[in-house]
Length: 247
Image (cartoon, rainbow, N blue to C red; front, side, top):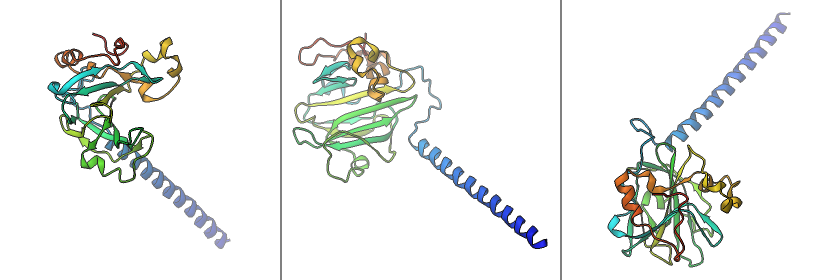
């Protein structure tokens, strides 16, 4: 009888220990996931998210030849980011706000030029995207040791924090023009633009670029917003779209 009692007690102890270990493992996983997510987050402490968050232009105003606002359909693709054409041979591309690197890709396309696309989390649910960068800073470049891929499918990257105004990369353009892409997305809102009839084929696509795109230049305070708008120009003499950026 005593032996049976000891056996039952031992079994209960094993069951309790198993639950405790399982709970600890789950806690560690959840804690690790939470901490990992925190690394990719920019604190909103002291910020008013109802105000424009971008403060520094991504390249010097004097270096900008033309800005094509988002909203063009080019080659059958709906472009929800802007294009910035620049005058010098190369330009430094800077962080317009404090932001954390999240993902990116190193790739080549028709012209065999190696290029980079990178994405960052900013404050207040903003996501910042650059494409057609030529030489990212070392902290980004070292994360792409493999040969360039033939598409722009991004991979998760180590979180690197960039302070406002800090150089992210230099670029000499996309191989065809002195131009790079600049897009901003707001995860707190759903875009109404993609619901318009002319964009119906993209309305059900859950991609960030279709569902959360906003005008990058409306994220600046009025003075810099107007300076950017004054540099707007068309692509291939087409009328400038006013779906996202409206004076």
